[in-house]
Amino acid sequence: MERGSFLNLAILCGFAALAAYNSLFQLPAYVVFIRTVGLAGFMLLCVSLMLGPLALIAPRDYGILLAHRRALGIASFALVLAHTIFSFWLQSGLNLALLADANGLIAVAAFLIMLVLTLTSSDWAVKNLPDWKGIQRLAYVAFALSFVHFIIKANGLFAPAGGGVFVNLGEIAMIVLGIATVVLQAYGFYIVRGRKAAAQAAKQNPEQKIEN
Image (cartoon, rainbow, N blue to C red):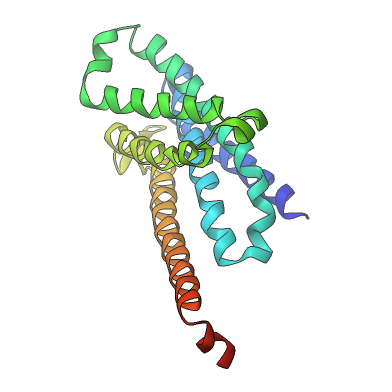
């Protein structure tokens, strides 16, 4: 199986697992839907950010997957858009006052940044925007805000389902994925910094490079 196909299959399995797990809770269908698309949107955002450092670590294995990052980002925003609309409409009752608290402002900021990222993900934007890469780096800010929003809204380590209390596996999995994203980004930054330092040293000491 090609790596791109395997990635798509893994994402579909992850989405299905989240939907199936959330359906175990004795909650209204719209709440299950809101939770599922919210967690799935965060999952896709994490995966899109993880591909960069993975390609640095093992370019032969993961370099080909970089072409999927744009599609993953757009799909993530589509899920976040659905999560935002239904949360504001069905759970909040279109109450604008709820957007004024700290978590509401964090959610709005994350949404607006992801909107900008999606609108500037076209081929035209890549070719014509002078600082396209700088704009796309806002994805790290969107991730940080989304992670904070998720932690604040998390339902806790244990959750009731089917008359019993169970470990909240869905949210724990997303927390682990978020932490893994942070670790990989930090390691990717370390690799890039090391390569830049090595390139700078090679420019300053070309004779040493020839001797070696």
